[in-house]
Image 1 (cartoon, rainbow, N blue to C red):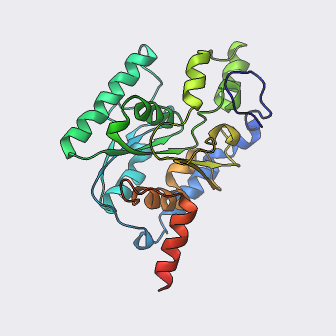
Image 2: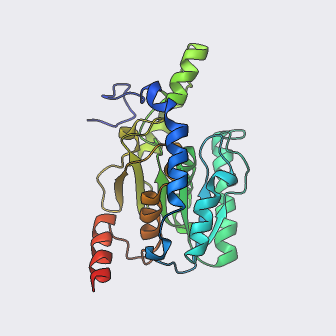
Length: 259
């Protein structure tokens, strides 16, 4: 299957609208389930800054449980600082420059490189910041981010097409750039039962410093899912400069717990 953005031919499409209709109920159940999670089993952090970027039409409130979890684990976790994510404000490149400067200020404040955690559209921002200024970024973790797809690979894009008769247009060069892996350790967390974006559009290319980690979650509930929190905690706990894939890291952690 080709995920190249240089062609309009894809072997997959957006999730069915019926699956999107189940998203609120599934997300509610996931939100409740994370309240019963035993967080004492999660690895603790080293105090480096973590910046969280919300998904489309989401804000700090949606990310607050995950931010609080990161704080409890010992990280300097903060929201992106721009309120509700309604998409780029102004020209895309200017908007990305503004977000990059925000991360630069966080890094300067703490004197350490930041990990960026982005949910859906927020993950696109995180990847682009890492591409612009890799020296600022320790790693990127995305949750349900369709960086290798187009508007027709999200139910949001399909709904726009139904309402307006056309899909949102994105420059081909930008699409190709978004699909390329940032030059820092990168983890894409995705779900095959995602009701908003095609899971195939969330998968990284096979490169040494990038990985794909599959979970079973709704799109909305990715930020509240116990399995996602476990993966995020494990990734954030990776020693700087000694990143290793999740499967390897989880196996080592399991052996340590066994002893």
